[in-house]
Image (cartoon, rainbow, N blue to C red; front, side, top):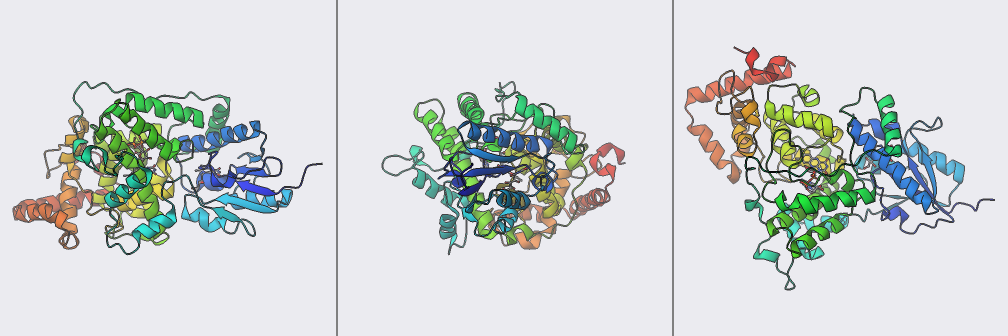
Length: 521
Ligand code: FAD
Ligand code: DLZ
Ligand code: SF4
């Protein structure tokens, strides 16, 4: 007869790590691990089908690896006829069947789930997620009493805490904390770009692809060509490949964008990192080791480490510090619905067509594409933060609210009124033209701000400055654009605003004209 179950240990789809807190004191003889594929999590936003495949395939691989080590795993598949199709329902079904003495889980990455988790089982123990460098309580302490929560100061603390890129005397290596100014180069023509490693689906992934194809027939995105790592072993190989081949170019070309080059010198590790296949500190230590061995320059290593122990930890801190109110913030009063081309990619704006097309195919876009193309358009056009939030949470394979929401509401949309950034990341077409080759093939003219073929980013940029002039006037970092707007001849200002009004009206009406310049006289 089976021994009575001591502990039911719940592992979520983005917690597939041997280091997850709920498994820290696992006793294979007395405990059961519960993992459940449920429609509730597959449908709470219209996830990209590749994201669903990634999560379910990684869950199945992780469960198999646990079972191979003698751990009892209660694994509920999406098409199991008894599946309650919710996390709460599956925990309660397991409790009724196994009668464990206690239930243990690890805090989830979304407020929505944490709120629900507290009611999953009587006395459920919710453990701190130790996969992060900065515990939430430490972030709260760091934030307490500060009038400004700038990332840069948090980042310096994280450098000191981890010792990453620090001298034995406690100074930053290279004498500076930040090499960002060196990380904004344009990509030279003909630059060779090494492709990331691809992982062809094995039998487990192929079965998940079939399942997702059947169950999510109208799901967003293309399922063909799935090639994300789905095990820790694969993710480590992908990281090693990045460090050897793309990290050397990461610093210099971090902000560059190029037509039909979705990855450039980026790591493409966030899908694996955010579900637990990689450990963030170990990733940074491997990057530091490459610098100490002389294989990469300091600006590349520092630029990369800052993204992880700086931005990644910082946005998580902001999320948990400010939720649930953060999810309601709309400081600029943006109300427009999301245009259809965010889903279809069908627009004459070549930059958006490129980024959305790539997103549909790969469930991936790099940071500047997310921030300065789709994010910038949403900011300038005044798209409602709820709709933009839902879009980013749906379409990227790495998207969980703890990291997606502060980046979207805070960094891209300034909907938090400046908690995260000191000014809106608003930019005209000139920025996109400087950092990419998108404009060369565009139906719009990036040099024009008025007229039927003017680049929408240009007139929308000035319209944004004019619309929010009162609010922005108190921000010293906005003095220059406000002054430039004021100095413009009145008739030009009027023409820009009229063009923006017409475009936004078409956009709001869902008119295809807003997406294609030549249809206008
Ligand atoms: P690289 O450029 O190679 O950077 C390395 C790592 O640094 C990333 O894997 C990531 O873990 C971390 N990182 C870099 N920038 C950020 C950042 N701003 N915030 C947090 N971590 C960062 N990232 C997500 O992981 N999930 C999201 O849902 C997400 N949504 C975003 C939404 C918007 C509007 C914006 C502007 C950014 C968003 N980001 C998000 C941050 C960033 O775009 C992605 O982390 C990055 O593009 C992932 O690709 P990569 O692994 O090639 O990153
Ligand atoms: C994203 C996702 C998906 C698509 N499916 C599941 C699932 O079936 N079972 C599960 O445990 N987790 C899934 N996840 C991840 C959860 O949405 C994630 O754990 C929460 O959003 C908290 O971060
Ligand atoms: Fe985008 Fe404007 Fe350039 Fe076209 S011209 S690609 S719309 S920035």
